[in-house]
Structure formats: structure tokens, C-alpha cells
Length: 536
Ligand SMILES: Cc1ncc(C[n+]2csc(CCOP(=O)(O)OP(=O)(O)O)c2C)c(N)n1
Ligand SMILES: [Mg+2]
Image (cartoon, rainbow, N blue to C red; front, side, top):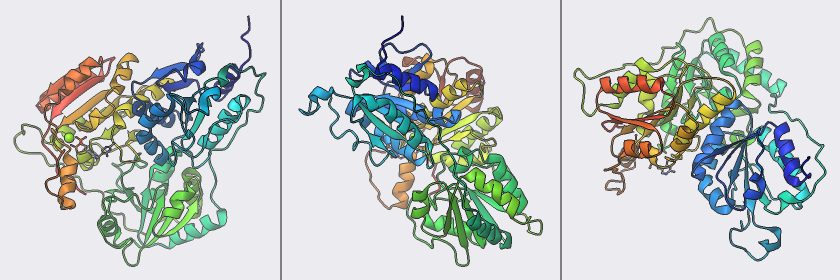
């Protein structure tokens, strides 16, 4: 017996064609007409709060390199999701976020669960926002949403679908289209950039998140080596795009106008590929560039190009641009190779109790399998992570692109689900601060339900440590709300169905990490650590 053809069945056929068969969601009554008779070849990934839904879908899309589909509950669900949607927007993650709207018959009277001004609500953190004018437009709205999400600059889009639309009879949708996800740079302008790069005495390369996202990891290495150029990591990056143990890698650029400018002193040319110029925070005044330094930027995002504070920009996909530059630039064999990044890796003579973050990272660096993915939200120890745990492979470092915490715990789940979807097995390590762990903590339930052996290492310093460093920088003593006593993190983790352990020494940590890495369920290892003064 064939099902009656409706907006719902036609839309599911389209979603199948577009390979959008995993739905990340948290349902409500306005979504049930969409979810009814959920097809066997689709997977519903339930997260228990919408901030978790978004971050899981985000990294799932990144890892599978396909748009991902999200279904949330009307305005309340969308509201909970918004914080992490900001991260997806800045990370250029192609997400199709949908939610149910009240019945068309009732909408005019501002009904219960109605989503007032539904298409305005997620702005400006979506590229496109739409509610179909007619039920029969729903499939085409999904087609357009897919196109908008995928095309550069890729990013999240939003669709609000009235709940009565799904049952409306509809014959079919036969206008499935394909679209491009890359735009090549203008060849003439790229040629001029190449000439300026070839003429540089001491070029610096800054590779940003777009490079890894475009599949440009190997091309970036080839370009750096051909030019014999110093490579810096873009500020506050959400993905690493260059091996952080490479001899040409000089470390992160810094984050403020002043630190970045100081760091670039001595380079006559800075070439920023796939990043903002720059993702600044905090504000420490200085020159945007040192005297005598010029800057070139290549990005796929016109907004990012327009917002750059200095330099000349060129629009284009990072991988395509780097591949073309590789053919055009002169080899830099006459240049003196830059000094590699200093890695003092100093440990105390006698072990500390509580442990210091470097002692924690020393253990992690011994135990980490080379193919492990790091999802980092240990806000005060980012510098220690690069020193001790450099990212050495493509697609293996993720962090929030917006600065909003409560992203990494669910993002680790999305990485593991994405790897499973594409048939890859890699250990996933979530390095999380005790404060950051709380925002989307229920994501670990999804990890447990799906049997994802994620290893969370939670550094419990009983405070929002980085905010104490900010209080010094901002000269704002006496700020309330920075201490976090009395959190029973391991108990909470067990309550969500995870393995959990509290550890106090390097030996215990090493032992627990090894056990967790061979487990078939998620583990939360809580390490009591000393606060770390952050370099801002
Ligand atoms: C959603 C959200 N709320 C608040 C903040 C402000 N914030 C930035 S870092 C931070 C503290 C993080 O503390 P923790 O995870 O314990 O890391 P630590 O600094 O102690 O290493 C807070 C509250 C934020 N970035 N995002
Ligand atoms: Mg903390």
C-alpha cells in the first residue's frame, strides 16, 4: 500500500535526495506533524536542550562535510538554540534549522506556542530565514534553504513551517538542483597578490579556519614550505589549519590589536588566508599593523573581507586560492627559515596538588593517540594546549567560533556521530573547564545513549578562572560570580549514564585516560587543578 502523497512525504523524499537523513532535534507538539511516521532510513538524534542540538549538528556538518538538519520547538526551542547558532554563523557551518509554527488557522490571533515574527527571531545569525507562503511551497523552501546554507559563505539558515502544512496533499517535487560550494578567486587579482608575495623579504602566513574547512590543510603546508614563510595561527580559532608541530609554525598570533601588531613586527608582508583580519579580543590599543608591514587577505566571505581593519582583500575559496598561489609564487629558498615556536614545556620538580594545567597537559600529551580529535573549551589553558598538545592533523581541532561557552560538550558528540556516519573511528577528547561544562551538560546523555566513547577531561579549578585574568586586565576588581564551589561533576555525569572518575594525581589521570580510551561509553574525568593565569 503506498502512502498518500503529502507535503510531508514529498519533503522527506527531497531530504533523502539531499542526504539530510539525520535530524538533530528536540520535539514539541508543533513539530510532531513533521516527525510522524519517521522513516526507517532516517535517524533522529535527540538532545535534551536546544543549545546542545545546535552544537551537535554543527560539528556533525563539519566532520561529514555536508549540511545538517535541525528541528526545534517553535520560539522557545529556537530561543534556547540561539547562543550556539551564533557560533555556527561565525564558523560558516551549513545548518538548516527548522521549527514548527502554530496552525495557519490560529496564527492571526497570536496563539499559544505561536512563533511571532518567526523569521525575524534568529536574525542576524542566519543567512536566510523563511516561512513558506503556502503549504505546497514547503519542499521548495527546503531546496532553497539547502542552497543558501551550502553556497559560500556557507552558514545556518532557518525555516518556520506551520504545523498544518505537512498533511496537505502534494503530488511531488521534481526540481532538485545541485549547487557549488566554492568560488574561485579572480585570477588577475590573485596574480598581483602572488607577485607581492614573491617580492616579500620576510612573509608571514596566517591560516584561519576556512583553510581546514575547505580541505586546504596539505596545500597550506606546501605553500608555507615553498615560500619558507613563518606561519602563525589566526586569533581565537575554531579550527586549526596547519600542523602546530611543523618547524615553520611560530605559534598563535595573539588576540589584541597590540599583541598581534607586536608579533608581526619584522614581517614586511602578512598573508591571511581563510580568516578575519582579525578576530580581536580583548581591546588593548596599538597599531593595527606595525610600520612597514603590508597585509593581504583571502576569504570566501564578503562580510569578513569588508570588515577587515587593514590590508587588501581578495574573495575566494581557500583551497582553490592556495593551489593557484602554489603555481604562481617564486620559491623562497633564499629566505632564512624562521625560528620554530618555543615550547619550554616546564614542569615542577615535585608534583603539585592540586595539579597545574601543564601537569595535566603533560599526561595528555603522553597518552593522546595521534589521530585523536580535540574539542577545546578549557578557556584559561588554551596556550598550554598548543604548547603541549599541538594539532597535527586536518579536521582534528574544534572550538567555539563565537566565544560562547556551552558549545564544546555537545560539539564533541557531533564529532563522534559525524565520524560514525562517515565510517571513521577516532578518539574524541573534550577538554572542558568546570564552568563551561555546565551550560550544555545534558549533551553527555546523548553521548551515552549512542554509545560514543568520548573522553571528557574537566579541569575543576572551582572558578571562572579566565574571568579573573580579565578582571586584572580590565582593572575591575571585586566582580561577583566568579567562584564555583560545590559542583559534584562526576555525580552529575553518572546521572546522565556516563562513566566518571575524580582524579588528583598524574598517575591516576593517566590510568583513567587509558581506561576511558578503550571504553565503549563516554567517560568524564574530573581533574582537580590549580587556576591558570591566562595570557590575554
Ligand atoms: C554563554 C556564555 N556565557 C558566559 C560567558 C562568559 N565566560 C567566558 S569564559 C567563562 C568562564 C569559563 O570558566 P571555565 O570553563 O571554568 O574555564 P576556566 O577559565 O576556569 O579555565 C565565562 C563565564 C561566555 N563566554 N559564554
Ligand atoms: Mg574553571
